[in-house]
Amino acid sequence: MQQPETFSPLATRLSHRPVVEARAVPGYDPIFNAGLLVHEGTYHLFARGVRDGYRRNPGEGPRFLDYVSDILVFESTDGVNYSFRYVLATSGEDGDHSFEDPRVQRVRSSGDVQVVMTYTNLPPYWTGLPWRIGVHRLVFEDGRFHLDGESRVIGPEGIGNKDAVVFNLTDGRVALMHRIHPSIQVAVFESLDAMWHGDATYWDDHLAHLDRHTILSPSPGALGVGAGAPPVPTADGLLLFFHERRGDGSYTVNVALLDAASGHVISRLPFPLLEPELPWERAGDADNVLFVQGAHRREDGVVYLTYGAADRCVGAAVVSEDQVLAALRAVR
Image (tube, rainbow, N blue to C red; front, side, top):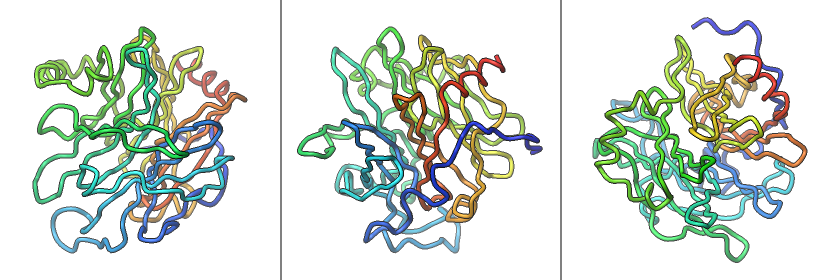
């Protein structure tokens, strides 16, 4: 695939080193693909931690064997210097074989604001079942987040479905952004409970009209796109930071502007905000991968982003909301 001749000057990395390194927590090797929630002035990073002992698969099947992920929480006061705090969810004990790629978001529903974690629920590979969307409510008590109640798996049966984020439309309905390969779709519900309990009738209708619900498709020559961070509200609409897998297999950080009433795309930058450049972004368990998952708009109008790098560690970057919106207006 031919790449753009110029790349975005809009995003700036906060460090030339990962903000969370691999092996930063005893018992874990890669620590990457982290969601984010800023609560009471503290950055809470929800990272996917792969347990020690995994190995490359010499035969057919998955790339790695004994590859099991838990969710680890790190905290920071500045978004750069993070400290490990606790394990939020343990695979095999909290209802899932493996927790992957968590996103954490606040969602209004039924007169209340709830904290929802979405993640990829990965069944054991020998079952032959596809990955699905897992959801879990979180509650903040005694200085930390806890799982609140049982997890659920949502979406159509028997179809690979992942990269889910949840957000509100302007009328208060709850939108679920998800990825049935290779594009990004939006499913809309009256409430979180309706999303939690969406039945086969709902999902059969959604699949029957999937083109109508598709909001983003890969660029010419690219292999796929997927939602990254929960959308960031602005006066112009919702900023969606997402990833695109290019024809050469590399992953980039991209941005689009969504209509806040429908969740559909108003405009999309035709070039990435970030692409793999630094050594730890270019080489790892999956080379040349930037996988954005966290976004927080600060009071100064800067949007802070977290991304997984090469399936090994976590990086952070910032973009100016005003500059990104101006660029998106220019390509409408």
